[in-house]
Image: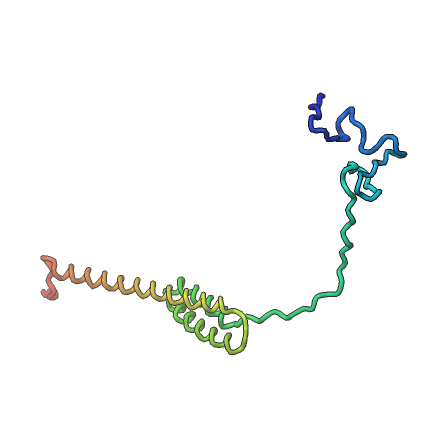
Length: 164
């Protein structure tokens, strides 16, 4: 196996034919200290790098004070659940979820509880689902009124009952 030639003037101990770092005239191959640096080295580093002090040891220290987490308002959770359930129940529970969300936000402000985002999501989701369902039912009724009106005005429609 051939290795590329070192053209940058740096040394790598893993390359064949290169000397290990340090001054070979020093005992045990210790590198000479460069000018302006304290005597001392770490094995495996070239002599032109200064020795830096190590980092302090990490310890666990004193345990952190555990602060109890804020409790989430139960009505805020119920608001979001009821609002989302309105998709399955044709909007009946969506209006309940929106109202619960308004009540939950007031309780959260008074008591300092958590869950304001849940309550707000319940309000928004509840009103949107309720509005979409109300729109759907309105369009459904309008469709059947038009259908019945079209059938009533068609030729051949006789509103009188058959008599024998």
